[in-house]
Length: 194
Image (cartoon, rainbow, N blue to C red; front, side):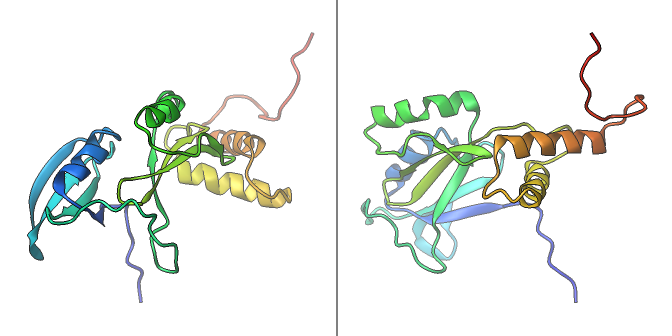
């Protein structure tokens, strides 16, 4: 028996209200270009809107003109979606709270997650959205997930409760040593000679 190996998220589809509510939020607030639209091939009364979240993958929304926005927070329960997180640059992240506040969108402000910064808010339909900004850049040829795996191993070995900047820095050093050669006899840390 073999696994079915995934290679990334293809798309995520949400149930929306009317068409314009989706366009106003996904493109007008989050800057995701509205790239494609066709009928929902399973429910012809609905439209299927496609937005590019910035990496060429897709966020899609089923809309219907007789549905009105309901901002009631989506229920939290087993099997329910808790939140959607989108990657943003540090420059964008530092402006996120101000830009949400200007639109009257309640938000958490900056939250330090140890390996990233987050800000949370709800879309017009009550879905919790997170904007996330990593604290690190992976070395060439290494993914964010590989850095987190290495930082996790370091954190656990040291008995720490959560990942901190120290674990990330040490993980990055270990990954660079593993992926990049050196002509030095040793790659041990040392203090410069006076």
